[in-house]
Length: 333
Image 1 (cartoon, helix red, strand yellow):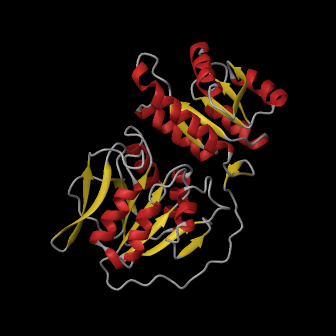
Image 2 (tube, rainbow, N blue to C red; image 1 turned 30 degrees about the vertical axis):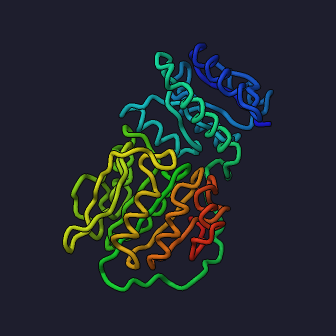
């Protein structure tokens, strides 16, 4: 049984979240708190497995509380945020501090969307309960495991690195890009992220990377030294235009319940780049991209999955490994 504490200053939201989570077998809402001070006392008394935490609260904001929590009593936290540009920056900061994931504030007026919202919050709470929380920070200072296989060799300079990620991916991607020099091949990234967050995510990465990081746009040429982030709410594909590789944005239906979908991007890279691609599947819930890694491998690409120890949730990379589509399994650090 997963014990959940709901922290939100709105009594209506607390009641709604309680109703949604309590209706799910395997989840017990052990309490709710109206502010961080109330939450601090209830954490000691109720010992929850997962906390849902509102970003904006009186007395102490959610970010300050999260920072203290992860330092003193690290627990899996799912942030509840407004899906706005301002909310994006705060939520990304929360993920840096150790929050496992985030959901939007429920829209009480849109009853038709409530079933989908309930599924999302339930799945993210279950995923958070299994998350790898390490020393107050997610996957911080993990001891490197021995790497397997030989160094990756590409047949030509027409190369691309394709990275897919979900839960825990924003920080994993940041860590990877921080270590890479500016003369790397072009990198395309599909991270499960809302439309209002992807631009802020790209800007945040660009501030801490030697490579130039930006949100992908239609028809943009993929160049060495540049990183292209799939916009939230659109699939990113890699297409050919003569000798050039370009970004194509697809507004089609969600694939594997996601948009952008890693599966869509990987398949396009397999078709248009083939053996000159390096395919990397990072931490994430579910199995998006796992089957497409097999297509990438069959096309001659080198496929790499993040290992279980350093993953926040070993869903997507774990599924790719189980299905036999991975050449190498490596730690994040």
